[in-house]
Length: 389
Ligand SMILES: *Cc1c(COP(=O)(O)O)cnc(C)c1O
Image 1 (spheres, rainbow, N blue to C red):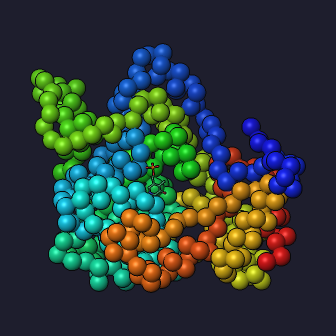
Image 2 (spheres, helix red, strand yellow):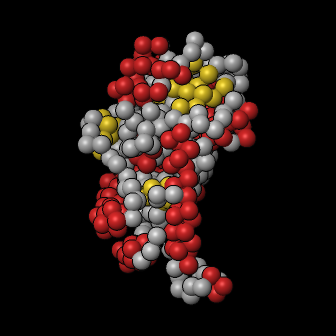
């Protein structure tokens, strides 16, 4: 499966990609089953198994698999009745979906800066951004390290604003001993191919406040009460609310369940990879003014990514080129949302979120995937250590 690099790149070996998907267990067997028993639409055997596994493992009231994390966020915006002119506080250092899902309902994103250590929403800057129009706060557990949820929930609670956790990076991580995804009234998961556990494209909505459960089913089923119909609670189903088509196919749920059922193995593999980077690059980082990830002692991280904070944009660009010449793909993200074309339309300006603007230029993500072999990882580490900087 390895791809060769063009000669012109000055490298003749196999490429180490940034991400690569892999089978973790019984994916093909389960997909074959869904097809043989004729269950390829949604909410059948394997979707239900995913729901039960997430509900029982995390202790959430309800879990519903969806077509993506983006769609789970759109469901959250519908469930919280976001209206034109409402405001939603999101970190600027994050993925576009978090803002977009709420902007689709006419809401206006208000961008919060992140903490310089964990790169999570800076809880000390949150209160100043809350206005009478604030309808929701969306913390993102960046790299699977928990946000300061006690402080965030305290501010949110005082202002009566609901919290929705974007837990795309944080599944099976904990904050002060409690699972990420169980703090907000709602939380969203991603099973996109770049995440720890995947089915290619997929997500889930976690519901921690049971009053959202029935309406979530309706929104997910095109605004119909189809779920109640199948439970025999109504004798016909019809259009009862807003909604869209957010149900995952059971073919994908079969793939997803095969990964979810071995989640401790996946997390353990990723922990080993993360720790190897962390330990073997520590000395080099020290002498090259490179900052490694910081995980506060009260956070059990979800081992989602390994990043380095280079001293400058120039150093980052040079390291990316150095790795690429050795057949290794390292990538960066995120461009500050408040400085994007859309962010500027909502009033974003340079200097609004100084930490975001700074780290966005300097952060580099190293190859990190479940099947990354020790030999390939050693090659990445050796290549970094050879970087003169
Ligand atoms: C990947 C990601 C998403 C989007 O997930 P999709 O399932 O592709 O919609 C949202 N938020 C964060 C923080 C992500 O990393």
